[in-house]
View 1 (cartoon, one colour):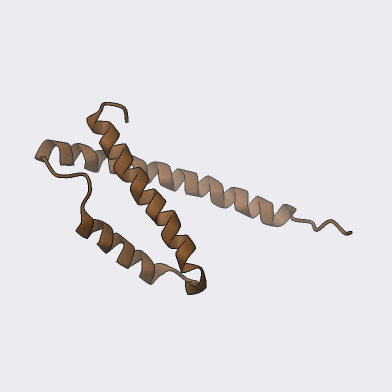
View 2 (spheres, one colour):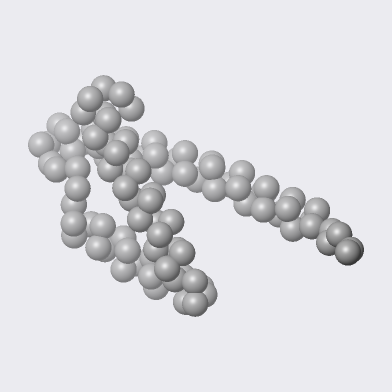
Length: 94
């Protein structure tokens, strides 16, 4: 059986992963700033309307609708993790 050469594609994936990590890091820094502002003003961490707004905006940006459930799953995890980071700020762990 011939072994398929995947080097080029794997390099591309590695580059994309690198940028994803950088972007997620930037996002978490902003999430922390927002969490601190919420603490100071007594706002709740979970904002149902804001999450709905984010999800609706993202749905419009998804380029391949046949994979929409995967995009939704990924962003559900990102949003959940963002809430956890903000909760940990309250506990002094973030």
